[in-house]
Length: 114
View 1 (cartoon, helix red, strand yellow):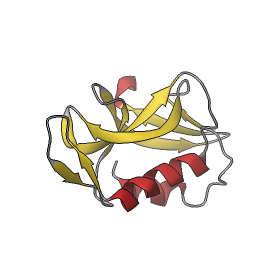
View 2: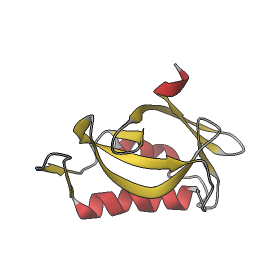
View 3: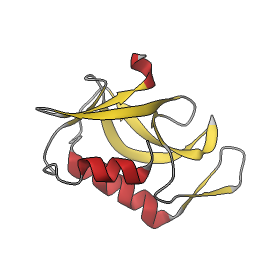
View 4: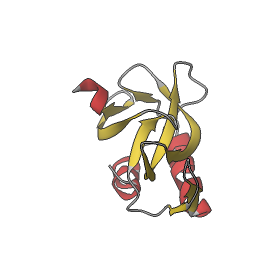
């Protein structure tokens, strides 16, 4: 999924709705260039919930858009725009975002489940 697709999908969800990744992890608000493909933006996840909610997800994506670029692992600047693909994980490893389920919580589904 890219930034535009994510923002469109979560646009009408209340900011205090909990966000989980694969029904177990939480987003942290940290982001950067994914080492596996420098053009992809990773959103960091963790096992501890530190206010992982829709408001945090929206602000993280908007902070990335406002920053406008990110440094690749081996150098170079890569643009961040609405078409930038987003993965969940960390600089060294990540899973592709497949979908977002919206039930009692907002659950990000990644390729880890496939």
